[in-house]
Image 1 (cartoon, rainbow, N blue to C red):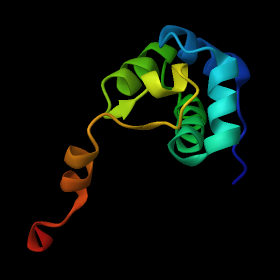
Image 2 (image 1 turned 90 degrees about the horizontal axis):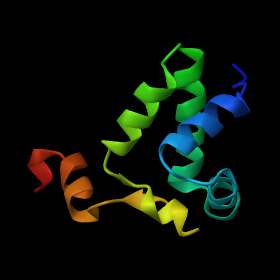
Image 3 (image 1 turned 60 degrees about the vertical axis):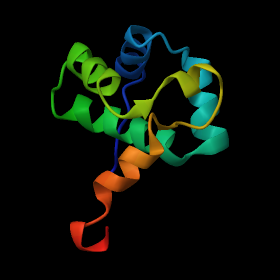
Image 4 (image 1 turned 30 degrees about the vertical axis):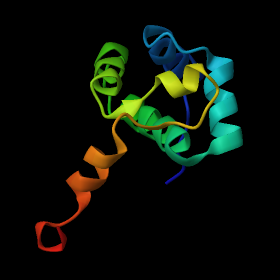
Length: 93
């Protein structure tokens, strides 16, 4: 299945998050990683009919450190230790 982006939807989401489209594009192109996954997730949310406000709220409430995008740095988790710990099965801790 080909993912079809809607640039206006993404721009509106980013505007609500106070992220410049150019910084987000830079982050996706230079660093890929979570920024690219976020772009695909925004596209999928659009295709499922999720509203711009719902998407922006979910992103701002997530563990992603979106401030990094504003700085042109790679997107990461707010607290890496917490995020890693969350995904390690209990038998391995």
